[in-house]
Amino acid sequence: MYITPKRGVLDPQGRAIEHSLKSLGFHNVGQVRMGKYIELDVAAQSAEEAAGEVGRMCEQLLANSVIEDYRLEVEGA
Amino acid sequence: MYITPKRGVLDPQGRAIEHSLKSLGFHNVGQVRMGKYIELDVAAQSAEEAAGEVGRMCEQLLANSVIEDYRLEVEGA
Image 1 (cartoon, helix red, strand yellow):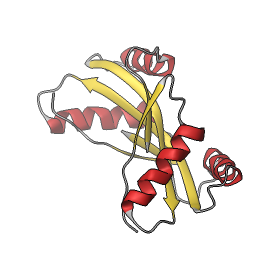
Image 2 (cartoon, rainbow over the protein chains, first blue to last red):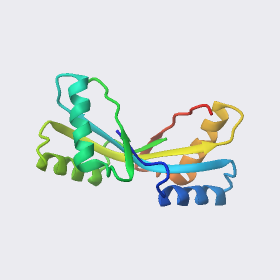
Image 3 (cartoon, each protein chain N blue to C red):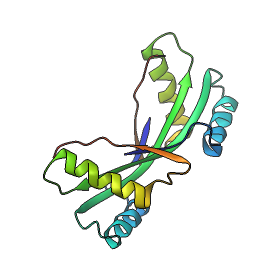
């Protein structure tokens, strides 16, 4: 799953990366947004069940829904 | 781009998430790996040029190639 700062929320890590890249000479860089990427294995009967389960994990623990969005991708095993 | 710990490298954040999820009652969770997800805009003539540029950014700044792998996806603007 991908957890990213919502649009409009200040992203200090992204800004820091942007400045560092520019000072390394990468002048064609535009806006940088930094988020989290989490891979996990879930035992489930179906892709829908796995997605529902991981959605609940995001809501309860992994994402702060006030300032972050999340997005899931399910891969079969 | 996605930056993840290499297989075999200890991933303490992933382990911490795994334990927290289990203590919240998600017992069907297997291994968790935590990485970084970075979105950035690059001005380039082609997808190949953009990918090359972002690859250089990863090598020079964003990923620690001793312990991390990275993977790129390019989207047209």
